[in-house]
Amino acid sequence: MSARRPMIAGNWKMNGLLADGKALAAGVADKRKGIGADAPFDILVCPPFPLITTVVDAVAGSGVAVGGQDCHMNVSGAHTGDTSATMLKDAGCGFAIVGHSERRTDHGETDATVKAKAEAALAAGLKVIVCIGETLEEREAGKTIDINKSQLNGSLPDGATAENCIVAYEPVWAIGTGKVATPEQAQEVHAAIRAELTAMVGGDIAGGMRILYGGSMKPGNAAELMGQADIDGGLIGGAALKVEDFWGIAEAAK
Ligand code: PEP
Image (tube, rainbow, N blue to C red):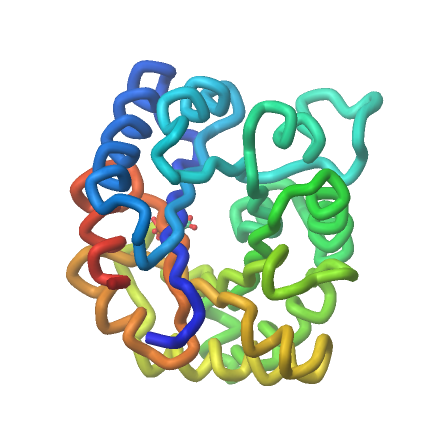
């Protein structure tokens, strides 16, 4: 584990009705309250948009942060179905995820879109988690490092600092598949991302910026992954939907 403060972030994706979100958020909040002010990690939950205010209320005073799973690049306007970063901030969010591979695939988001969204999040006063990661075909073609460097260069917002920006390395082939990257595979890419960040924003910022791993992280594999020098926590999908699993991962970050 590095000197950087680990972050355990749950991406609930399109799961849960109000009652489910309230119960899950309350369960995570209880666990977080149980360890008091000296928690050795940050905890974030990212519910679907309609659940955000309910979840914000459910975690109030617990130290659990809330984030959106996406945001629009504009503040307001004729963008049916979209939600702006300003709206997320207003609803009580502290974070936005941008560039998740499911957004890139389902909505055709390019690196330029992701960068614009990340900059909108920062402008709204949110912290941003920028997701990058290669597909299986890209890995098998030996392009893993190049793809991640290129997505990072295209997606990182101007003005990124160690405080306002987090990178999530999420190999697409590991998301929701049960096929987790080995700690060595993940560390190789995290180290390359940090080296690229150093070239982009300088060693001070790159050295302090957290890089999360995402892709089938579970309580059973989390400690070994987060034990790698450049892995500073996790972005967790499926295992974030059960309090015990999510908290099992958080415990592994201690
Ligand atoms: C994710 O969607 O960000 C993710 C990592 O999902 P899972 O943990 O289910 O692989």
